[in-house]
Amino acid sequence: MLFKNIRTVDENWNVLEGMNVLTEGTRITYIGKEMPKDYNGPVTDGDMKFLMPGFYNTHCHVPMTLLRGQGTGLPLDRWLNEAIFPVEAKLTPDDIYFGALLGIMELLSSGVVSVSDMYFRIPRYASALEEAGIKGNLCNGVVCFDPSASYFDDRSFRELLELDYMAKSTDGRIVADVGIHSEYTTTEKVVREAAEYAKTYGRIIQIHVSETEKEHRECKARHGGLTPTAYLKKCGVLESPAVMAHCVQCEKEDLDLIYESGAFVAHNISSNLKLGSGIATTPEWMNMDINVTIGTDGAASNNNLNFMEELHLAAMVATGVTRDPQAVSPAYMFKAASRTGALAQGRKDCGLMKEGMRADLIMFDLDKPHLLPERDLIANILYSAQSSDICMTMVDGKIVYRDGAFPGIDRERVCYEVRKRQERLLKEAGF
Ligand SMILES: [Zn+2]
Image 1: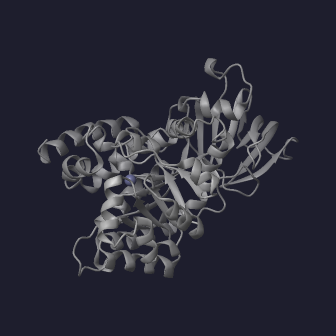
Image 2 (image 1 turned 30 degrees about the vertical axis):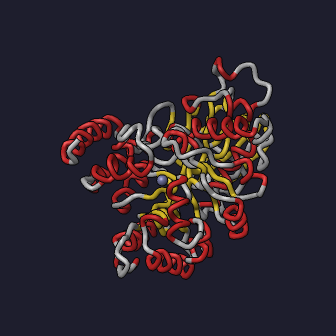
Image 3 (image 1 turned 135 degrees about the horizontal axis):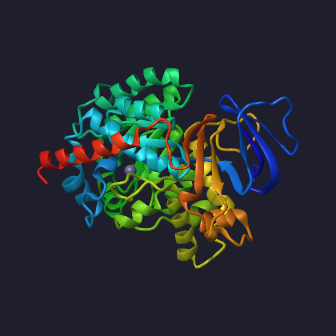
């Protein structure tokens, strides 16, 4: 695809005017003022359009779209135990498949090209990702309360191996990560085994960390004063590239450990606000040069998967709580969402507008009343744009969303299946 005479950005998010951007196969092969020579493929006219890297959502549970609205008003522990776990126990692989497709529509239409996700039945879930054309780092987060049980006998590990096999044919689009649900839902033996496995095989670890004050406090009581981050370090988790979700209650010493290990933090502002978990100290993370990335979390606690809204809220809350309108810059937010997010997923050839990178791109339609007048395009995209201004999402050079349509998804069928399945699930779970 040739994007002709279009506005785009360089690696540092400086705006470039009147560029021609060419994608061939899965990659960006040319960016320049001159027209590429001898090109006769499809062309997109760049008039009133803006082309930029897509978003890498680093913490989600996409199939939880089926549980949207479930347990509203409950704090995290009661929300999980009373509203979520009983319904999740009834989910079939096909429920997860259709729930995933529903969520993928929200992700693609809000600019997400790749998602890090912790759920179960992940091989079936991955087939939804492949059909829709979005990338994903999937894991089944191990939950284990039996002190003698081994990680290697757990369903979480079996699903990782199954997914690995399937991922081989996806040209890196699907990646199997090691998943540890959290400190409070897993035994020390299992955490150590999973960490050792990840280190040996060079895997990324996805985990929830210090999401609530209760979790943080109870961990310290259980482990002789160790915070969740200190405990995970002791168990070897920080020796692999880790994506630590939430980190709302992390203390200064925890942040030092995270920085030293090079781990990635997934900031989930909507979910943290909705569940009343608190507000993470993101400006402090940024000042410490911690790898900050953005995640929507699942639709049951967000309550949508609108990534643009997530970015908007993350920026606004950071400036609001610090009482400093310069606490975050629009370029920083977009780097966190694109390049840093891609690196958190181990995707070194993604997340930059640069020749040779994978063509994971999104295009905005700038011909909108709320985007005029324009003083600063990047600030306008962060603070004024809506996800409905995204008119195209491309993953690995393939258009997977354009003007409201998803070439890889039967939208009507998915909506029908989700309504039917949600009704059955609630009945089976006794709601
Ligand atoms: Zn989560």
